[in-house]
Image 1 (cartoon, helix red, strand yellow):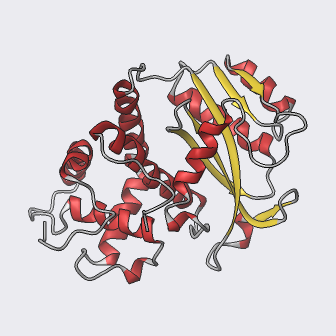
Image 2: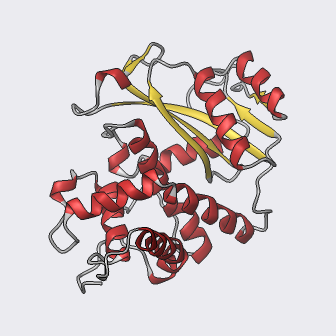
Length: 279
């Protein structure tokens, strides 16, 4: 690893120790499949720190500072981790460890679902965009499923024109496939009977949670605050303030990169993100 002055987005030694075994095993398996006879040129920690820098600051890849590895090399690592499921595996492993640290079982039994519509950048194909008729936003819609403490368990990104029901069904399928223990989920009133019925078919009791009648403006709603707070956490990463992913899978991967912050800091007792003093 090249010695350089650290950036605020860099992993601490303790957090890197949680991630390093998975990335090292990935690199070894990759080299075993296609041996080159030469040592890898890019340090894995530098590559991951560079990815975190892009994710946190929102810069284009080619603007990556020169004390990181070449931006093309970093992108190649990111694309491989995205396409080979490494980011999904990291989130799964870290979520289990964070839940155990909180005194919970590694496999969750309950979940919370919400969506967020965001505008897209000019490089996003029109074919993967749409208009959210309710929020009047042209772009994409993110679906997030978390456990009851806000750790992200499932992610999907679609055109903003897709309904909450469509995203909810995708999220329930994804979550149940990864976490068969899930038997309960809370959703807001944007989700209708189709999600409730689909959940029942999967063995998940989906409960629609209403806002308090007669209360205007923001207020904490039963269970839903956990996923709403998680959406707040991920958009602190400026790469996610707008959708820049040419592919929806890239957008999903960037959400998973952002979500790595939370469980690693919980596990190592480092400060979790807040809205103030982080820029």
